[in-house]
Image (cartoon, rainbow, N blue to C red; front, side, top):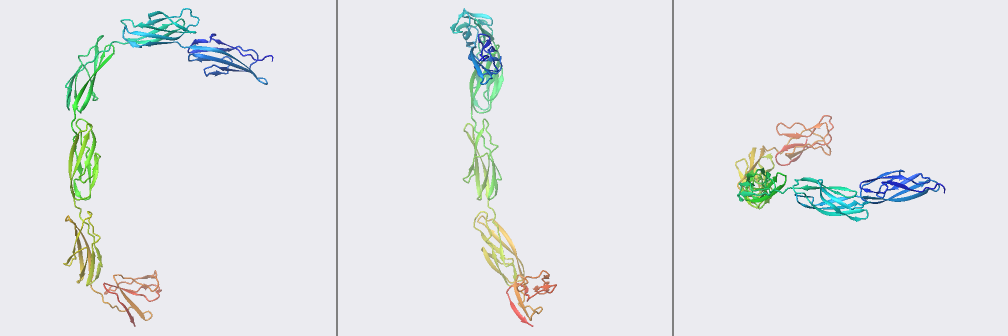
Length: 518
């Protein structure tokens, strides 16, 4: 079809050949109709411009593709190709540094020989030719070479440019000229001993063949340091230390020397402290070993034995003693060299007194009153046996956990129980027993309801009972009888009291039910 697209393009540089990074200008010279352009530069880059510009960063051979499209039905496309060749010459030196007079091997690769008739190169050291007419080996459009040159005599220490000049390319590399390093030498006295040890160090026999020493730097191996040709240093901790001398010459080169200083280990010092050191059982004691120290190192472990079979590995420990007696707690500390130190502290645990507890039944009653005293709730915190001794407050005494005693006289009696453990520790407790005058077993009837009154007497439990019903809210207990301490029936403001009320009389012994008709 007339007007069909025919793809074509040109490049600048026209040869498609160049040194990385290479910028190439592409121009569309296609014929016919075209509505779009698609460029593939072969290195992953693309473009839709008609006349794009692309940079190739790395050496290699790249195939460039141009596809143009004329949008008719159906669309018509045309594609064409060309090649871009990118090279990157290199120059390597071995070694990259050395003193004046050092032989150096120079190797060049990927130098362009495109159109070159004489494939030779020249090596310049700081602008001075050190190798000329070096032949190159051709490989296609590339050339490579290997040659050796010598750093010019008398060249001062520093960094210099080495340049390789090929038929079409120039490549630079750097070479560092160094001076001869100085020689360090140490004299030390003494080389061993116990802490604290002061050592005299001298570096005056150090030397520099091609210059002079400008500084002396000392590292004593224990984080200490100093400067100067002679120094003194004191070591305070045991161990082996590598003392190092570094000397620097007038050109900045350095040399080092080392010597070993040995110090004997000193055992650590244990300090055991405790609080409290005495008391009754169970006794909780705080142990403190934190004041222990090592004169020439560090403490790495603590070990407590408490004298009762228990132990702990903490610097600060807590321990509770359960039984009364004397104990020796021992602290053992170990330093970083394996030596140990010990200290001990004496702990005295005393007996804890027992606890007395009395149960009395009854606590109050009319004479003669027989009372049971129970001390079974008494106990000893040490779980040992107890002896019971009673003082009944009326001149009588007794022994045993549970006892009875009869009081025949009216009065208030202070009863004391003493409990004693096997360690002769005693606990005491007391209670009061009240003995009152006997109450007569008959009481006159008060009031008549239905012709019969029932009189009930209760021991130590005055209450009012209504037959089959609760006491109404507007009722109350009457005041006690002035002579007999009697509570009789109930009194109701509204007169709603129904049934026959019981009469409660407070007495100290016996129960009597009596019916009296009037």
